[in-house]
Structures are given as C-alpha cells and as structure tokens.
Length: 412
Image (cartoon, rainbow, N blue to C red; front, side, top):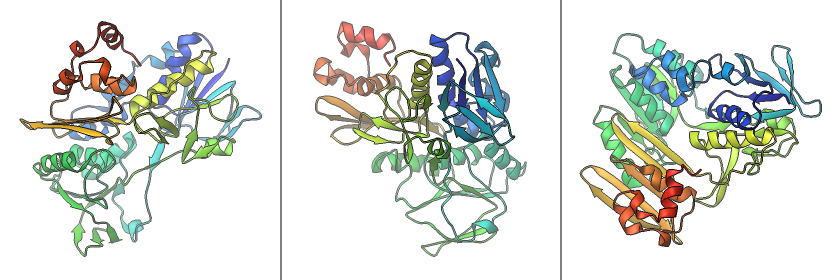
C-alpha cells in the first residue's frame, strides 16, 4: 500500500499515526508547500514574544518523527493536481507521485477581502504560518518605535497582538464586529478579555472598518484615520479545497467527508481545516478549524486508509488560549439554559439543554476543563451524574464508578 498525504500540519500527523496503528511498514509520503518539519502553528505568537524558538516549535513531534514512521517528507513542494483516475499527484516541479490511498490535509489560507488602497501598503503580512511570523519579526526589527495596525479581532489578530505588544510603540486592532472574538465568545466574556488586553496598551476600534488605505494610514468608515508602520491582515481564513474539488470531491465551502473521513471520491480522504464537520453540540454541519478536531479526523482517516474501521462523530468547536496571561477555554454551543458565576476575576458560563451540557466558557480558572469538554463530546446525560457538584468545580467524584473509569481511560 502506498499512502500519500498532502499537507503537513496537525491533521497530517493524525493521519500518519492512524496509519501506523494498522499498517506498520507501508511507505507514507507527505507533500507540503512549507519547507519546515511539522511545527506547532499556534506558537508563532510566542516566537515573536521571545517565549519560544524556531527550534522548539518544530519539536511538536520528535526530530525523528518522519524516520520513525517510515515517512518520506517532500517539503517545500507544491501539489498542482490530483488525478483520481490515474491515482497520481502532480507537483509544480513536474514530479508525479502515485498513491493507493490519499489524504488531503491542505488546511486553510488567510482571507483578504477587497480593501481600497491595500496594494499601496508595502509593510504588510498575514499571521498564520511560521514564514508570516518571521516576516513580521523582520519588519519589527530591534527598535520599539513601530506602530502596528491589525485588521481583525479574532483569535489570529489577538494572538498577533499578544506576540508584538511589548516590542512596539502602538498596537491598534480594528474589527467590523461590535466585540472581539465574535465567533468564539458572547458579549460579557468578550468584554472581560478586551479590558485585559487594553490594560496592556492595545487599542481597539470595533464596529468599524477600513474605507481606504494609503502607504502608512487607514481611513475608517467612521471617519477616523489611523497611522501605522506595519499592517497585519487577520480578517479570517478560507479552506483550501481547490485540489479536492478539481479531483471530483464534493465541496460545500469545505470538503465533504463522512464519519470515516472519506470524501465522495474512492480512495481519497480528507481531514482538518479544509473539511466540513458535523458539530454535535450545535447539531449542524460547518467548518471547525481547531487542532483537536483536525488530529482526530486525521487519525480516523489514517486508520481507515490502512484498512481499519474507525468512525469519528464527536466534533465540537473548542478553543484553549491565553492572552497576555489571562487564560480562556471554550467549547460547544451557547444556546440553552445558562449557569453563570463570576468571582475573584474568574468567569464561568455553562449551557445545558435537554439533559446535556452543550457548551461552556471559562476565563481565568480553567483547570480540569477537559471534564466539561468530555461531557459534551460523549453526550453524557446530566441526570446520570451529580451535575450540581460538577457545576461548581469539574471533578470526577460527580460521576458514577463506571463513568469515572471511562473518563480516566481517556474517552475519545
């Protein structure tokens, strides 16, 4: 069996490790347009902040990861076409790679909406990859007199702000939404995070957008003008679906897959940010661009590519992040009955519906949040546990003996 994986992120790692659960010896080829071994993408803000190094970032898996798993890594190579009839992958370099089973883990790319005058800005970047971080680091230089404008107050934009705020004279974040992290948080917790970030000197201009750029300024629709030396565009991302679509795979914003991570084309699988997942918390199909989901989809794909029988139907949105020392973990849906506590600088929102925990938001104290996440993933009936106890503090004592054993066993 000849396995080929397009992409080299978290989903691809899951595919490799999933294959090796079933098939220990068949060759695996990974093709990635990035020239680096697999690295911890969320760490790029800490690279700028000086809390990690490039060498440590590529230790997401051991240096011998490819060798240990019999992987040929074709790094710095870009796939131009998938021929599903001939079962080959063509590269821009002219090379052709045959496959028996293929997994598309192409991830996503920055979304840059049309903005007047954007081409006039020389010092600009997105903030998704190690190369983006290195480019921004070069533009920042050693002086701390730069003014940085970030367009986008989502996770990418705020992590960028965290990575640079101590290295610049001014950081301003603009977003069309009326609050930060609009796709992650409700209004109150968003205001808590915003106030904390503002206390570090970052400025926000919300419910506003850019009308016109010049080389070093942005005129907003509100009429305000913001000067800058460096521009970071962090508006959002779009799944990389083109290769799969041209190969005949069904696509609806993302690549459509079943619970075995198989596409609609025989012997082609897909995993990660480029796919559509079924969100069991909100009971809807959507793109869930999160690391745990990417890994589990990849592992599922790998096992099934190798002849196993693994299903994954427990996808939920979740985010675990920190902003300048303030920790946040969220998961699931926020539609239902709310249980809210705020004390000692901590914020906890639990949302229940139909005898199940559907979602939560924790800010500050986030220890053992995995118990809440597991309740959502495993769809545990709240009537089967002591939920009054667990609402106050997540603890295994709230579960029955059988359920505790399941929790401690690391249920997926």
